[in-house]
Image (cartoon, rainbow, N blue to C red; front, top):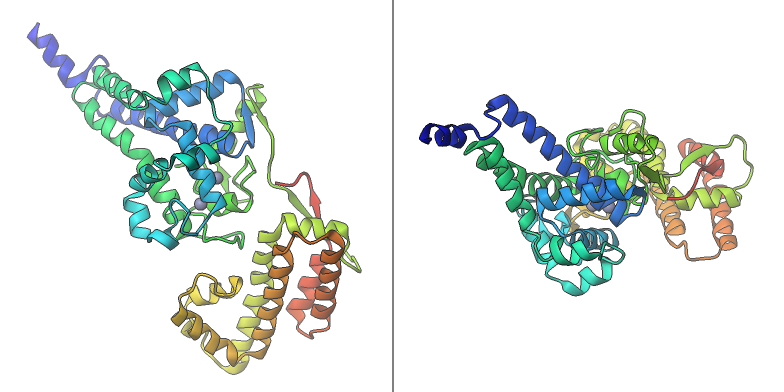
Amino acid sequence: MSDILLAFAARGLSQGSWGSWLAWLLVTTQLTILAVTLYLHRSQTHRSVDFHPLVAHALRFWSWLGTGMVTREWVAIHRKHHARVETADDPHSPQVHGIGTVFWRGAELYRAASAHREDIERYGRGTPDDWIERHLYTPRASWGPALMLLLDVALFGVAGVAIWAVQMAWIPLWAAGVVNGLGHWWGYRNFETADTSTNLSPWGLWIGGEELHNNHHAYPGSARFALRRFEVDLGWIVIRGLAALGLARVLRVAPALDIRANVGLPDADTARALLAQRFRVMSEYFHGVIAPTLREEAASAGANLKALPRRLRRALGNGGRWLDAASRERLGAFTEGCPRLQRVCEFRARLAALIERNGRNGDALLEALRDWCHEAEASGIRALQEFSARLKGYRLVGEAA
Ligand SMILES: [Zn+2]
Ligand SMILES: [Zn+2]
């Protein structure tokens, strides 16, 4: 009898060893990531995809089992992040709280945010409020992880406790620390969004596509996060698979852009595309106009571009919005000696203001856009002229995000 007990304690019901522990960890942590990205994030928070009730509940159940997080709280905190991004009200902005705090203590920030009950009610509207939510998932949130611990120990004996510890650390580390922290700190940007979001890697395989965080901030309503040819979004692959089986319905994806040739004057299609693709436009302006002008100016002045750190060069794409006073001064001193660079930066600021003031009526926007293009073409700066010609041809393909 004691031999049986000892064997159970050592290896559990599975009697498995390293290989099976790792396989179980891989499967369960990926399921948890999928429950978060597909159910909590894309479906509940942003309503970009609908799942068959059975799939939706399976994901919701797994999110309870694997994380013990309450759907309404998660959704509310994340919606608030989008609504108040990089301000003092953002629940987890590295700009406000510092990268160290968001990375290492992201779970604490999450708990603090969930204590704001008014926000949870306000931002958490439309999340499940059925019998099982009111009697189990919300009031007994910690029972999910407790049940997972029992399951781990039953399957693997004492090793199950270590497996459980890894499972429980998964979301605090990858979602709270890596996505919320590093995803607003380090990586590449496709879109000049009005925040510091970044894509951590073009292959969002490990965290279900959530690594493509700059793409997500550019088009929060899009069910697909991968937007460039080399980007892969695992969550989207799963959605496509479920949709093929009739178990998911995609509600929205990011609009695609079409460039018409030889458009003389910007028209209503141009203006619509410009507003829907505003972050992309600003990113194209940086790469197509500011960066080449910067290189030319530096070459003609014999200046060494390396003298200006990359961080400062990149800041020209957003008017130095995230720089501290000293860095902004340093950048100002550099651009002072480069009149053409200054000129294209002024054009950038005017274009950004034009897009951001999108509350104005369509005719006024169109008129301002026509003036901008006209002046850009008369500027004598080739990169700016080419950008303007391309901009006029913008037209949306598909629906707006
Ligand atoms: Zn974010
Ligand atoms: Zn989001």
